[in-house]
Image 1 (cartoon, rainbow, N blue to C red):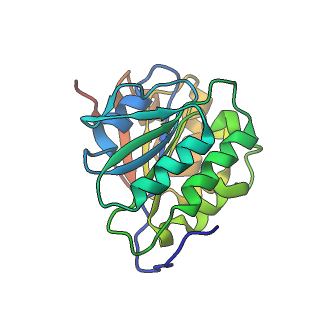
Image 2: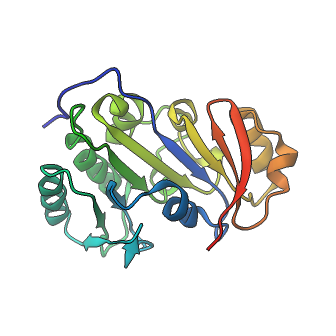
Amino acid sequence: MKPVHQNNALDNHHTSVIGMSECGKTSVVKKEIIKPTDQVVIFDPYKDYDGELAQRTVRGYSSLRDFAAAVMAGRKTQQGFKIAWQPTAKTTNKEFDQFCRVAWVNGNGRHPKPLKIILEEVAEHSNSAGKADGYHGEILRVGRKFGLHSINIFQAGQEVSKTIFRQCKYAYVMMQLLDSDAEYLQVKMGIPAEEIKALEKLEYIKKVNKDWQKGKIRW
């Protein structure tokens, strides 16, 4: 199966969220990116999205087959949903690719709602810092034509594919563990390393194309 109704007029909404452990990456997704009426699928191997997301109950499935069926049923409607795959065993690159395949085949350039794809732990499931492969690569490179909006979450820029930096129009840069991490992001994203180094927990720099501004998550 493939996504349907290619629409070259659709905008790019791919997003990256980058920061060290416990800096607030998942909080950015929950507070800044996802809305109650969105249709959302979540790669959630550590159950970070149990409970509610954007005031909606997250339906979690341990079975990939059941998850895929729920997503396909949801996409036949115009209603918002929050559906997570929460496998019980440790995931490998193969399982990550299978999740991305489910998201990929549910793309539809004529659907009134985009499909937002939350991808936790991207670095753990990346083969290299080179070109993104598999269905993740397909989503990044051409997914916007089918209404697919990926949200790529990871700790260090050096550990993920360069395709993410090239294809994500939006980025939230958060507190980094090492100065070298901030310096790497300056090269890749054009944000001054000193601005990144100064970030504290729950603070972020939001970048849209070449423009950026600071913000902070408030609960």
